[in-house]
Amino acid sequence: MQYTLARTTRMTIQELPMLLTQARNSSTQRRHGWLIPAFMLLGLCGLAGMAWSAGPAVARAPAVAAAPLEAGPAPTVLPSGLVKVADGRMLAPGIARIVNRGELVVAMLGVDTPPFFYVKKGELVGLEVDLARAIAKELKVNVRFDRSARTFNEVVDVVARREADLGISKLSRTLARAQMISFTEPYLRLNHAFILNRVKFAELARDRPLPVVVREFKGSIGVIAKSSFSDYAGKNFPLSELREFPNWGDVLKALEKGQIMAAYRDEFEIKRILKSDPTASLTLRTVTFKDLEDTLGIAVGIQDPTLLAYVNQFLAEGTEKLTIDKVLKALDR
Image (cartoon, rainbow, N blue to C red; front, side, top):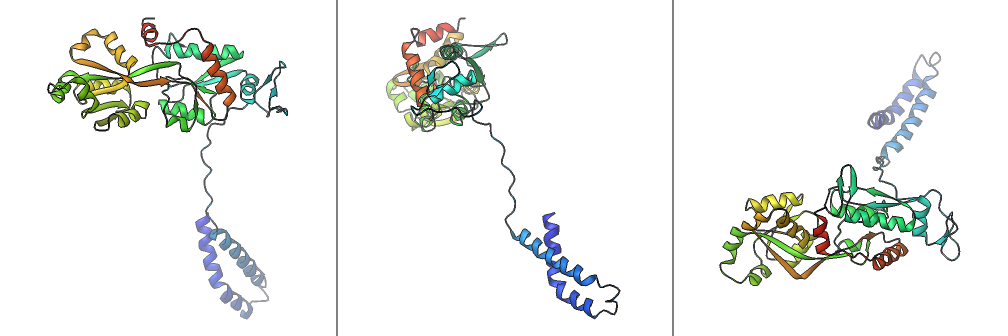
């Protein structure tokens, strides 16, 4: 419609003086006296149309993003900065938001990662699922899991957009992620590790000591795309050839086919390969880096410092601390 109006406007403005003159001189002026006011009206409409068509194009409305978590009307914040909830407790706004809503929303990767989180007989279970439920129980609310994220970085994005209160999803604490959200203190510490294709690695090593070869690693390394280990690889092994894959399964397939020399991830994921298939040690070998640590933490929005302190205190008071051995043992459940 805008294009048609603009074209009509140009023709009307150019022809208006001539048409008015013809109308005045016409012998049929008396019978068609309506022409002059009609042309004048057309000219006015044309000028309005020209102004409209010359204006900026109307932009389409942007896609509606998921709304930040809200609990209805904004609560009344007292002079102390606290909020009084229904049961009479005085709570920090970030905690009061969760209590008033009646549920803790936890962002968790949509891809099952046993034993941390996975679906078993139609129910979401796992070590981190238990952790989330324990925090919700302490807050006296229900828990709801948001599993819309398809990558670990997307879990961080969900929390950063305030679509979830916490992100509990085997999240490595990295500098890149810490620019968007806050991390709790670690609840699990894992060392970095390689799993190597024996044949490919032997060709690279050529009888050189193992520590020398891996510290100056110049082979190809496979990692999950947009993961913490993608960042770690470039930082810790700058001479290597980095290859990214959509998921861990694709990384391992490439390793088996000899398309990459090493797969890089935390020691748990490396050790579980040999645990599930002891014969894999015939073609693969592992290397654990005791001086490179991958710490897992819970993501909290930057607007919730009290919630961050609360979860840190919850972790500190917990009697069951996670270790690599406990995580490996959980695979047998």
